[in-house]
Amino acid sequence: MKNLIVFFNILFTSSFYCQKPPQIYFDLIKKADSLYYAKDYKSSALFFSSAFKENGGKAYEKDRYSAACSWALANYPDSAFFHLNRIVIQGKYKDLITLTSDKNFVTLHPDQRWTVLIETVKQNKEKAEAKLNKPLVKILDSIYFEDQHYRLQVDVIEKKFGNNSKQMDSIWHIIREKDSSNVIVITKVLDQYGWLGPDVIGGRGGSTLFLVIQHSDQKTREKYLPMMREAVKNRKAASRDLALLEDRVALGQNKKQIYGSQIGRDDETGIMYVLPLEDPDNVDKRRAEVYLPPIAEYISNWQLKWDVEQFKKEQLLRELNKK
Image 1 (cartoon, rainbow, N blue to C red):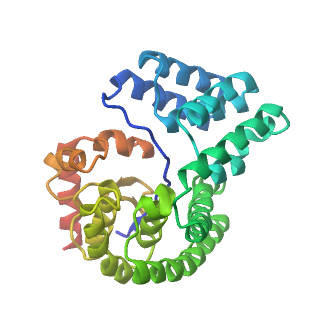
Image 2 (image 1 turned 180 degrees about the vertical axis):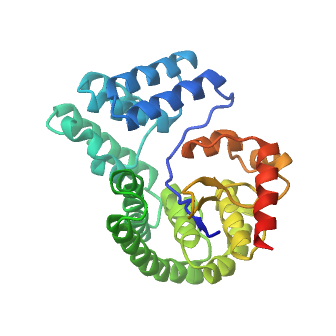
């Protein structure tokens, strides 16, 4: 039985609450997301609105952004701009690259409000990056785009053409080429400066360092893992990102992962599952320590359900089949 690590990182900037939203919020968001992928954009948007209402009108930034996408695609520009303005004006949203390249908002571009919105995002970005190493930030922004742009296409291509299609082979070929060139630049940065924090390269820059190392070869990941551990201690990197790197390195060493972040696909059946995991009974405790959501919530992104007893049985069976 062959296993393929299929998890890849697509990052979203999120705002965090002191108080976690009620479970119904997450249930409604999940339904909204599924309707979006089913291209029922109006229903998706309405479910997003219901989720926000259940949370006193508050929402995670990524969810409000998604709501704006659904409203825009449903041809309700006023509602789309309402949510975009909430994250841009109140949340100081500054991800200019993502917003301007997002095809979900193409219908909004002729609207004068789009021009005003983009100008505000530019101002947010300039204020946030006033003291940053701007030449380096520009380089890292470009690398971030290359790392994420093609990975964002994988799910759509797989659904349209299938996992074993020529189109999938082509997109993964591009991804591997980009990863190879990106890691050359990033390792030079790390070797020269060490693991830089958000005070120097911003949050996006820090994400770029992590993503490129995460998507590199095993030898490179092992080399820079200690550096990232030290960066987390010094608050220059996020512990949740380190957890993902720890998991990938462990699996690359034929060990079990600790946080359950890595998902595999059975080549024979096509079924996706959580790759070998240490002490699955306490995985959520470990995930909470590094600010990761419960594993049941996490793996639902792949339409998987978490049953710890069933997982332990299946994991044992896979271990026996290897012998």
